[in-house]
Amino acid sequence: MCGFIGFSDNPGDDKKSVLERMMNRIIHRGPDMGGTFTDDGIALGFRRLSILDLSEAGAQPMANEDESVVVVFNGEIYNFRELRSELEAKGHHFHCGADTEVLVHGYEEYGTEIVKKLRGMYAFVIWDAKAKRMFGARDIFGIKPFYYYPIPDGSGLIFGSEIKAFLEHPRFEKAVNENALRPYLTLQYSATDETFFKGVYKLPAGHYFTYENGCLSIERYWECRFEPQERPFEQCADELDEVIHESVAAHRIADVKVGSFLSGGVDSSYIAAVLMPDKTFSVGFDYHKFNETNYAAELSEKLGIENHRKLITADECFDAFSDIQYHMDEPQSNPSSVPLYFLAQLAAEDVTVVLSGEGADEIFAGYEWYADTPPMAKFKKLPLGLRRAAASAAKKLPYFKGKNFLLKCSERPEDYFFGQALVFPDSEAESILQPAYRRGTSAHDLALRFYSRVPDEDEVTKKQYLDMNMWLPGDILLKADKMCMAHSLELRVPLLDKKVMEFAETVPVDYRIRGGETKAVMRHAANKCLPDEWANRPKKGFPVPIRYWLREEKYYNIVKEHFTSDYAAVFFDTAALMKLLDDHYEGRAANQRKIWTVFTFLVWYKRFFIDEK
Image (cartoon, rainbow, N blue to C red; front, top):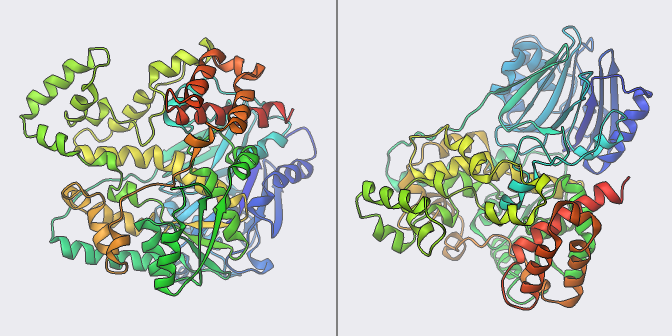
């Protein structure tokens, strides 16, 4: 729902005209209406996608009675009715039915502590006119984006839902962050707090900020802590099913049409079976073995739901790819962002809100990386001290067959696990980069920041914790928000709910991974609504046939044009890039992920720094 922008400085131009230009950049986030607010020291702009209280009364920026507290807010507060009743009992008066107003009066009553009472997905900024202070926050998972740019001379702050809006501010200096490229090549997404735009930062999930007298302060207000509680497996599954039903009920509240994304996997299938919407939406590729929409159609038929499907062509994907990277704001080479863009486009033809299954893999341990393979399970019967000694010795040696196996059996994910993507190993990333772009923090060191906060957890929990702090907000949720909002579609993720998370923190690790089965207790809960075939289907992600596309001359030449360009030579050894491409094209290697990751960056760079001067 919606998008906002703002700034605290004097831009040197008319504030209203700067606001309008910035708002127009994000009109896709809110095509229904726009609004502005200016005061001494603040300018706020808002684009609205109407979901709750469709009247003008729900418009933003929204203020209290004397305009001493003003808010711009992107997201949904799912417990707003309870909060409203609580605030009304304390004497606050409400003028509309929108959830936004609980932020206004909640801040009046509780100050910054209001964030600890919120259940929802959100990014917001509150202007406290009496204190001349800004206060803002981002939800606990990072479902909604929030960017900020301290103006280099210290004169103010620019902020908003999307970076592209900053391009319209006369004090914004557009430049590439030299330190972002190295970790991106390994992880496939922007993994540092500073974005690919130099000086632009992401407010981390579960954090709030205050900005007063030119001083920015950021604080963490929520932290994931797994504290397992023992009870029978069946009881745990029953409790989880109840929690998910309640979350879906909370997430379906809207004054517009609500549908559901549906793939062949357990997560989206479970949500669709609980929600029972009028329509589900699915996409696949017109390429052999890359169309799983038949699973979605079959389940929809069993549930009595209308399923809308689309098959995407390679030409459509390449034609839209520049627009996709524009909407992403930063390069993001997860191939699934491409079908997600078309899935959102399909759904937006019929509904304004969709529910989806993101988050289950992180909070219930659904990735195959979390589980031991049979050879690992057998090797782990050896004493831990012996295994760690072998892994320690292996770390000091050059790569050899079996090195990764020994590291994984040490039960120290800090040594080998940096998240769900591992495209270019660090040494290989450095070898293709020009010297000026080799300085970025390694994926290993980025991961250690989070591992150091959970030193005593078991290895599965450590991996989940890392993915919840890096992969989930940096990849999964970012592309979900940006690809859906590109088509003015609100995505809701009921598995990433505060109450669902509180339950997930109590699930024993052997209920998450059970006999090699991932997210075991969630599958068992889902089986109460779904046939066995859907509840137990192995995770496949969102497969995209880039391996085959890049062996077709037409698409090889599209990528080659970027790899051999003058701008590619600024960042890369272009001969090394062409070797990756040619080896793949001629069948000597399977380099599709590496090629796609570099190609994505170059498409992004061309769009923002060449096509748009």
